[in-house]
Image (cartoon, rainbow, N blue to C red; front, top):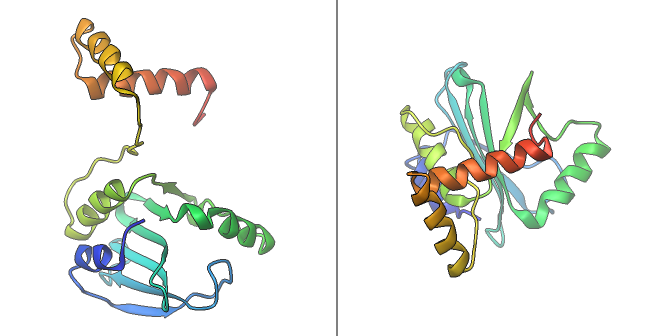
Amino acid sequence: MISLKDFMETIEYRVTDGSAYQWSCFGDNTYSIDHWNQEHDGISLSITFDTKTTVVYEATAYDYSANRAYRLTNPDYIQAHRAEAESRAINHKQAWDEVEYIDLESDEDFLEKATAIFQGTEYDTRVSVPITLPDNEVFELMKMAHERDMTFNDFIEEVLRDAMDKLNVGN
């Protein structure tokens, strides 16, 4: 999970707000720090953490003009957050209005998107999925990609998309 330092560097230490976190799913010593550029169609970034241990529970990056809301949640607390949302009759996927959170899987992906959103630059909207494979399987997949005259990353993306289509994921 990203650190407070990572987040603060991403927002260039420009904190515009902060408050105690109002839900109990993350414990008693929970606080959120925010950066908002004061534009309703602008950007906002937030991090929720424990004030005693500095454990980070969740980080969000909102790109209002593009209607995108990215969220990185500490895996140890996802179930607790979902359970509390359900007990409050709140859709845990909804960021605002008709916009749902795009849950990210890696710190690097979140920091890349958050940095670009903060700086107002273009960013890759695809979700990075970390994959760990044994060396012999990587070698076989590289040979298959070469046979199709594709980069390894493009080939893996195609394989994953095909598998998701077969499973009807995202439809």
